[in-house]
Image (cartoon, rainbow, N blue to C red; front, side, top):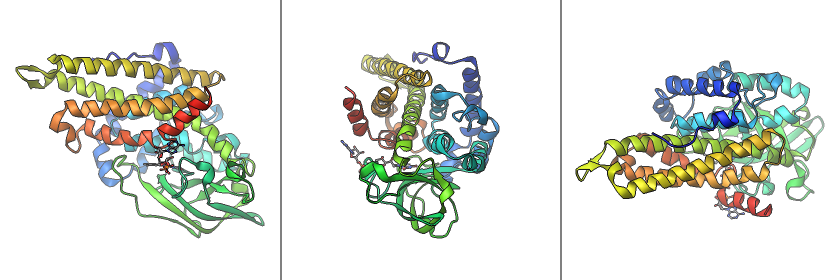
Length: 385
Ligand SMILES: Cc1cc2nc3c(=O)[nH]c(=O)nc-3n(C[C@H](O)[C@H](O)[C@H](O)COP(=O)(O)OP(=O)(O)OC[C@H]3O[C@@H](n4cnc5c(N)ncnc54)[C@H](O)[C@@H]3O)c2cc1C
């Protein structure tokens, strides 16, 4: 079996380990049997969010008063277990809800906004989207053009957002928009909460993707959308900084998804190699295959330690930004290398739709692009060297 170290005893308190067991059981019993249907439907059903809300999973990362307080080590165990499901679209959609969407609302939103929206998000009654990317601004977040002009006690929003996860079936949209057209780059951006159904707000058909099939992805359009001024999160023109702060959590989450998917793929591949016969022996008896699998196990073990260390540093209030960038720069490419090899060793079966390694391989690709492409992360690491 897998030699990848179990770091739970070294890093996780008892409460976290219990939560891991609970999520693992949920994934085995309530995700894996249905994942293929969700992929065919192109969405994770609302009942799944409600169930995760009931289990306390959606609130884990929020402040203690919302039943959370499990910090980034909570993010790690959640991401690993979601990743182990082998359904990347499901994992991504839930990760958006727990660790990427509404953290800014929880941290910087007014009491009124938090009271209005957080209970729905944490219970799974409302699905939340984070809307930063635009058709002409992705990695370069500060280059975005969507505007929010103040008009009395409202903002008037115009523009478009691209590749928004849960964009079709979401209820709440945290939109990063330019509130000060005179300010350069990142300085004049603010975060606003929009509700689905407001006049002038429309959503594209689902975008067709290579992977992440059970999460819906859309382009959003804003045509003179009036948003109450009280839906501003925190202070005007501070939205970029709030978003950047949230990236640390998002990067750790992507690292944890990568570890979970890698471990699942290596386990599936080991089982395959030990059973599949060729040249009068099992594939595992072939020396070259053994060496490569051992090499990948070594690399994954080292990467996993980096992930836990970054999360623990952040939870202890120690500097973790550079470590989180390293996690995001290193783990998704490693996951993709691992999956290249796992598909290869499955031969033709690895290329067949619906085999778990095929699914993990196609879902793996986006983790090196979304939430900060590998190159952008490497530059962030270099900046701190
Ligand atoms: C399935 C999916 C879901 C997504 N969900 C969301 C969401 O919910 N909300 C949201 O706001 N966004 C979302 N995104 C958008 C995602 O965050 C962006 O795609 C990502 O940030 C890259 O931006 P881009 O696609 O515009 O690529 P670009 O910014 O055009 O970059 C293209 C490529 O150029 C390279 N590159 C870019 N900058 C540099 C640099 N400085 N140095 C060297 N190389 C560089 C990288 O290889 C990069 O992949 C999602 C994307 C996908 C595919």
